[in-house]
Amino acid sequence: MARILVVEDDPALSRGVMALLKSSGHAADWARDGETAMRYASADPCSLFIVDIGLPGISGFEVIRKLRGRGCRTPILVLTARDQVSDRVQGLDLGADDYLLKPFNASELSARVRALLRREHGDPNPVISAGSLTVDRAHATAVVAGRTLQLRPREWAVLVCLVTRAGEVVSKRALLAEVYSYDDEVAPNALEVHVARLRRQLEPDGPPIRTMRGLGYLLDPS
Ligand code: CA
Image (cartoon, rainbow, N blue to C red; front, top):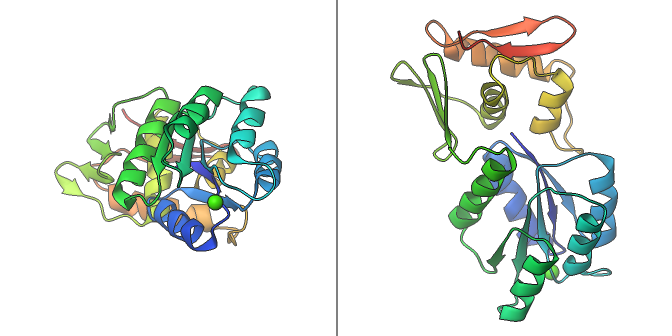
């Protein structure tokens, strides 16, 4: 659904955030310091950065400054234990889009992530339809002709990716990048398995997912 980079040095907190993101179908990667974050950010584009301010080595402020300095426009959500107004102001002034104070509530983090990703996609409306399929990204539900689909997180991620670009061919590479993290072991036919299960869920009255040989997949809204 989206590739998210979590820049946070606290392993327990990072694990919690990553688990939350993955359960929502995102591909989450973890950088425990600013230098690693900058390396990851150069390697592959991501849809959102979640950045802690207090990091070993370069601070979260510096990470934001560097990202924006190189022209990166990806949304940045700042996590900070500091409740100083000046820190929040500095983070936002450097180009962060939103902030969350620790300790935070999991549902609030999820809601802020969803809002930033919708903005990133230039689409503030959480509900998308294609034919008889309606996908509600705010509530993570997909309904075909009154029937709610039972989807695993990665199937959900693939479906959202296809439905937001309904009628267009989405490459396998793009889908895999949205669904898996760098360190995930990906079986060679993983995507085919997700798509096969999605097709079974969409049948008989949902929009078909067409295989465009050598190109990728297309969700046909007509
Ligand atoms: Ca920290």
